[in-house]
Amino acid sequence: LTATFGLGEHQKIDSLLVYWPSGNKELYFDIEINKEILIKENFGEIEYLVGN
Image 1 (spheres, rainbow, N blue to C red):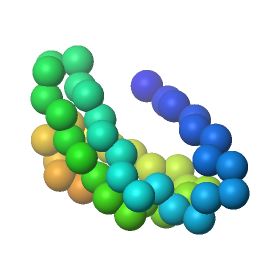
Image 2 (cartoon, rainbow, N blue to C red; image 1 turned 120 degrees about the horizontal axis):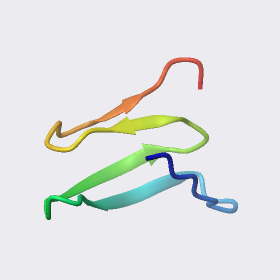
Image 3 (tube, helix red, strand yellow; image 1 turned 30 degrees about the vertical axis):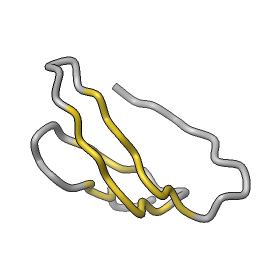
């Protein structure tokens, strides 16, 4: 699933809470903006994709 979010003039994402279809929840902090990221359930961290 790909999701795009507009953040206006914000310089970072303070926190992101992901609710997975399995019922799990994961919370991430201090995410860079203008980057393509990959989030995997139960992986525990965000992967920044190369070239973005």
